[in-house]
Length: 289
Image 1: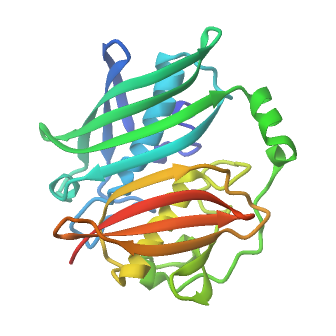
Image 2 (image 1 turned 135 degrees about the vertical axis):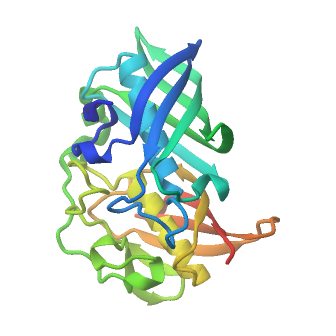
């Protein structure tokens, strides 16, 4: 698919392969998860990184907005919530890329004049003919002029170039400091969000706030550090975004272990606090070793 339709600068970051309308506000969308990815790479050489499903749904809603709903390029999309869950079998790494299909249903479509202003999607993820997971997203759509009015003087915000000292990469499942999105505070289960504007995946193109995918990655890293399971498989994540995460002040990331009621997995709730408000929350479910 055209990289502009999924708001990516790099062709290599485009996961979607095609779209077919299957009913009223229903679509079947193809995607391919590579065997190796520069950031969402294989986990313990056994599984695809399930966060690829979160990136897949992010690209899907943009594709539907531009291709099916005919929203112009240059529109801004404000995510209110994103979630995914993936079976262990659905994440299995084989000797070829994973070709997946997503059956997508759009709900709650709102319009301002002739143009869509908000909608949500639910999708089932199918691999080798079997449903292996699901994903959801709700968002608003605004023109560039409206977005600039909403953001005010924040619309031209740029990331800080002085970053917090990162945690040791190995405790969050990373090899390089460049890939760490948590800053060390010295306090157990509390970090600062570390947003590196030079990161080629999390900051694929210029933005005026911390992207939702970077927030979800910080939640994943916080969960792995909290569980002391750097090689853990994050099978599910449920994220809610209530405020923009800005560049100009520290954002505290706090993790709490929660009961799951399910054997074989552990859940960590992660809160993002900035400027006296909670900007986002994420619940991350990690496969037990």
